Each structure stands twice: as structure tokens, then as C-alpha cells.
Length: 453
Image 1 (cartoon, helix red, strand yellow):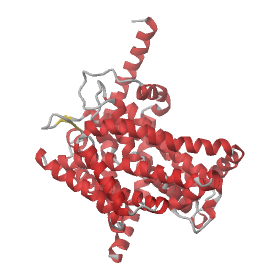
Image 2: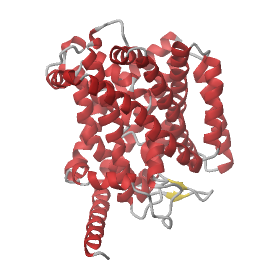
Image 3: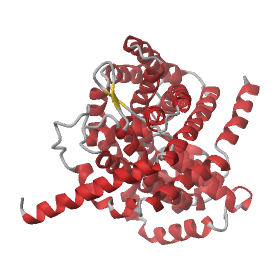
Image 4: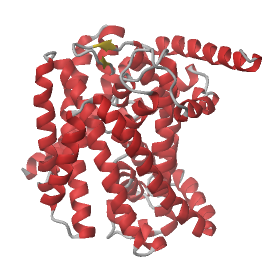
């Protein structure tokens, strides 16, 4: 087993190596240029659309704009926001936070492009529900079904690890360490919760995440804001360290700038999933009259996930200076940093945040995995088999060591990106066309509002 874990670790290193990271960021830069800095130009409108009540009840779709965003946020805001950021700073130094921001900025354009194609090429399945995502735009848009099948295989497998077992394992571990609750009890609670939500399908998932995600995000953000306010004098030095280390490799593994770039970009992408092809599966379920409208809402996901939530973790760690302590790793580093600034409340806040983040990831990824499975096996009656297996994995993950599962799923997660990015680049003309349509529509709506019509 140890040999298998080591082998998969090597494979993961290759999959998540420079070629994929360059392709991920490069695609974001390419789309940013083609779309004319859309993530800046239309961000105010996108935020307004995100938090406005969706009046569209006639367009095709299963859930609202906000519910689609919340489902995607539920899947992406997970252990990466607490554990992943800490690991990036440990391995890449404070400069990794800058490169996380860098990749997130261009990742907003990637996320937008994914959602455009997801809505554009979505279909109505045998159950009368929307089905979309890379599988469908690779088959119907790019006309490359073999790439669609590959993506679906990778996604269906990755869901059990990255989106399930490893998340429940993280929750069970932190609950045991912080509150002395046995892992099997946590496993039962998580399993029951997951079963109630997942068996209900996308409409139940959408309703639960629309309530759950804002609460969990605000909880962690408010804690971070309190730390910033109480320690405002440390912020300038921390930001300065992040920027200077980004180009010097200060405190990175081997002191190399390459480490800051690699781990900052890798952990940023791991957190917000821009380019991996997972989030557009949720975007495809949204009620919307135009692909570009939902895509603008989806774009804000990267802003909330990386540029806000991950930044809180990263800046707090750099402010504390504890990243220089070799004895602290992952969640332990984030916990120690919060404890330094908030005392005994710090570890509890991190623990509760991790519980919320990881639990929500299980819900979101259940939908991703199910849709990939549905694409491969068209028989709707088989979906209950997948859902039962997924729910069972929640308990297994909470009670068993999953080093091999984590690494294998990490490989599958990375492999999802390759066919998806090929689709984004190959269909970039479609993305530009749909962007022109939504831009013209926004201009028309503004003119109507000014004229009072």
C-alpha cells in the first residue's frame, strides 16, 4: 500500500506539474484578452445580478442563478481554503499568496467561459432536468465525444475522493481533535445529513446550499475581518512580505521563486477549480435566458472563494509569522495563526469553518459526480445506485485513512482539466459571440432603465 501511495504521489506530481499549471493560467490569460478584461468591466453588474432576486421563472432551468452559484461555491469552498492555503505558504513561502491572487484574477475569465458553454450546450435529460457541463460542450460543441467520455470518467471517480471521502475525513479529524468526538459518530452524522440532501436531487441541493453557503462564508469572513481590525498595524508589513516574496522566493522551499509560483497557482486552482470543469455542471442547471447572464454570476465564485476567503487565511498566516515554524503543517498552521490572534476561540473558529466548508463540498460534488455518471450511463434508474454509493463513502471517509484515495482522486481531478481546457480554447469563438450578446443586452437594459420604460 505504501508503494502504491508513493507511485500515485509521483503521478500526481506530473499531472499537477508545470504543463497543466501553465495551461490553466494561459487559458485564463487568453480568454481575458479575447473578452477585453470582462472580469473587471462587468464585475459590478455580475455582483448585482448575483444578489438580486431572480425574476426569471419562464426560462429553462431547475434552480435560480444564486442557487447555481451556491451549489458551485459549496463544492469549491472546502479544505483548500484552510488546509490548501496553509500548505501553499509552507511550501512556496508568503509569495505563494500573490500567485494565488494572480491565477484567480485570470481564473475569473476561465470560470465565465466554462459557464457560457455549459448553458449554451446543455440538454434536457430523460427525467426532464437540465444536464450540462464539459461532457456536453465537448460532444455537441467541439464534436469530440471521446474527450467528453474521458472527462466524465475522471469526474465520476474524483467525486468519491476529493469531493467526498477526503472531506469527511478532514471533518472527522478536526472534530475529534477539537471537541473529542469519536470519528464514527461524526461519520454517522455526516452520512445522514448527506443522504437527506443528496437523495433529494438538485432542487434540494440548490435550496440547502443557498442557505448554507452564505452563512458559512460570512462566519469565516467575519472572523478574518475581526483579526484584521484588531491587528491593522501588521497588515502593511504582511502585504509587503507577500509581494516581495512573490518575486524573490523568500521562505519558499529551496528559496526558489518557482516554488512560490507553482504552489500559489496550484493551490489557488485547487481551491476555486477554475478550468477543472466541475463548476459549469452546476451552472448548467440555472434558470436563465442567456448563457452570458449565468456565466457572469458564476464568475463571482472565484472572487468569493480565492480573492476573499483564501486571502483571509493567507494574510492571517503571514501576519502571524508562524509559517517559519517547521513543526506546523496544513490545518495546524491555520489553527495556530488564528489562536495567536483570537486566543482559545481561534481553534474553534477554524474547526467550525472546516466543518462547514468540507460538508458543503460533499454536497456540491455529489451533483458533479452524479452528472458525470449520468452521462456515461444513460439509464436514470442507475442514479440511485450512484447516490447510495456516494453517501456510503461519506462514512468510510470519516473512519478510515484515505491516503491512497486522496492521491488517486487528486490525479483524476487534475486530469479533468485537460479535456475541459481543450474545449474552452477550441470553443473560445462561441464564448466571444455569447459575450457580445449579453453585453448588448445589458446596454439595452440600462437604456430602458434610463428612459423609464
